[in-house]
Length: 452
Image 1: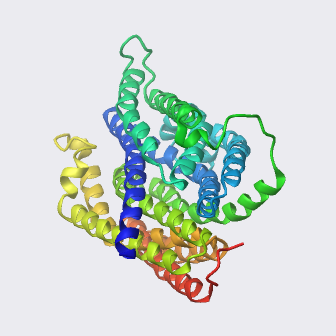
Image 2: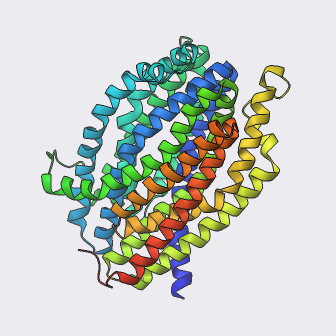
Image 3: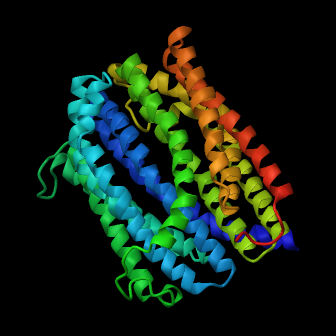
């Protein structure tokens, strides 16, 4: 009965989180589809821009995940005051993170040029990033409140807001990019401005819900202005910075791969952007389940029940692996139709891009199960408030095993872009093995009582 209850709890928490993440990635996918209408140059510029933006964004994402883990533990212990104070300080963390990231995004064209990217691509990437950068802070604010709603077991409102945002994002993409409905034609920059506007509207929507809906109003998040609280910020930052670095190791592996693809050529870079977008989209399923694992494990440990926390991990893992098997089969059997959603197959100039992207998706199918395994195991470790050692494991697996083997295969053995993607396979499999070993050690050595 306990397992059935845990399955129900985990599923009911994971489903809205997965749908929310898929909705947010759907907006990114729409952006990529719009870039495809502008041509391979815009797709290549989008690949570089997303590589930089995502790398910076996850530097803040780790801190919001730490906020969520702290909130889950407080909720398990029925400490509503801790929930209120931690959520409020989460906004300060987001602000402190956004300021240096804005500066980096503003000067990112110079960084691309120094890294040897084609000038014609850098010019388009600059237009996109200088518009996209302003969504950074409202996006983090939105996620901060997402963690609150999920930690207290009520994530459906976030799901509704995210799904509602998809058609608005498509409308503003189309209008701003092509100059429809009275808006000026801004090309690829219009896609960036559309994303910024939609992310701002999403944050305003969830803020209004948290302020006025009874199930959230009890926490009084916006009832008074608060200044930064050093003790709370230090506690969350101590937990969050290794999470951010761990995510940076994983996302950075894909981002550096994007830059290395640029050295191979525009065709593999454009193909990489398509395959990467598909992979990221499907990864949202195990990632949402991973977030549920963090919250459920944190809830149970906050209540002092170690065995229930282990049951929560096993339940989340079973859900994630089942989804990963389906994704792998989809990438193996339907890679062609998937790629053709992004780029017209009847255009001869797109033929090489499409064929390369199809092969990348076949390679991506290989690491789907390992990727789900490592994501959910890492989520459980975060619920245990174990973040430092997993960070070190990420360094060894992603950057030494993954990137090292990818560079060797691509440039020493001359496999080009295909070698870089096989490097991703090696890095992710190594990460899954290492993180599971860490979880087994933590589970057998941790005391039954909730972490202090």
